[in-house]
Length: 566
Image (tube, rainbow, N blue to C red; front, side, top):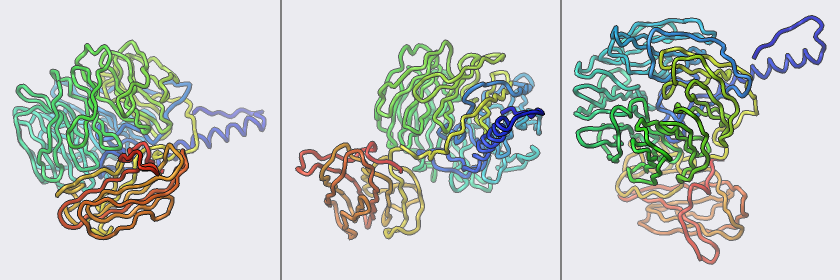
């Protein structure tokens, strides 16, 4: 925000200047809010004070407000090569980008200060061309350098060792994924491909070698599942792996064409649903167990170049069309709106006000969550931005980069609204999973869409033992009708339920499969405090919550639409 002082300014103008400075300070100070990857993702050991520490493994919902009007180019910086990879921003506002010189078989990583000056650059090996960095909890960058992962000091660009060299039959790695314990996962591609897990000390924890070709970057779900696309002779799949031991969990067949999966990544909703787009132009919503939830065809899908969707805080799914237009769907696959463009659209980024930023042709655009344009700004760049090039800093600056490595910083006025709780209006329940049956030794915090689980002899999470665990769900519940509501818990073993702070079901004892019932009066549209606790003893585990009316004329599992985080 530009400001200046002249002699003769009256008190009103001076007051306005002070107010504008305070507004800008409020935006900048938003960096005190920690970075989170989204409710559907496992929160990894990234630098949570960084503005954007990761390129792929998050929901692309920024905690900052972006430019809302009067956009202008603050500065540009030209690197020496092309960059098909995401930008990351550290806690000081330094933008980290990579650049590859294919003819020279070299690449560089650049750290650009928030004023557009070069902080440092570091020469990387020729086999570092496809790897974007992430910022770990110790503020170091982790990325590939030739045939191993390395740490880079974010203050000066000095290389430091992280992992031992792996195998020289792997040409390049994908962006590293970090879990909550600091384990680092990456997929290596080449004549021999491998999925690799490195311990925090850089030693290999496990690896799975195969002849398949990885077709996307990876994401890590809140349940500890690694999702990515890959293909082999005659098959193309979305696959899930157990991050703890490297065992494959399931495959889901899709169509992948050529190299169209490169630079894409599956999206995970708050309830754990995985969203992808295939080469035939279909959007797939896939349950965490690998079964299909729904499948919809994008209109006029002739181009096989895939661009995967992202999921907003409100549950909307935003799909950039490979030819043109940005489409919005609800969580059930119903169309909401289409924003028409004349060129292909980059993967969007959503700010804290739910405004959506993306690149279309040579234009950077901002639209609201209803699909209405806020502003459009034309840049003098080479060509379209690559898929994940949009980033937002804490002062609202929008960063984009074109296919030839030219970085743009776009400033402007930033609307400063009262900080909102990112969980406001979000459906689901806050879930705490404990490794003991008495609500002690908590291992997992996550968001569950509702309570409808049949664990059989298994476990709700790799960190939880199969038997003797317990769960606490909290949030709000809202009904669409007024009257007496019967609540039914079908469980194995014990459970108890509070609605509006009233204990209506209390059966904290071991049992086989059985139904517990309680009732309470609810007003339509009113949100009530909700808490349910459950424990599993020996062998089988199950917890399901339903409701019915006073006459038991209907009975249904309570859907996520009735639950709110707050």
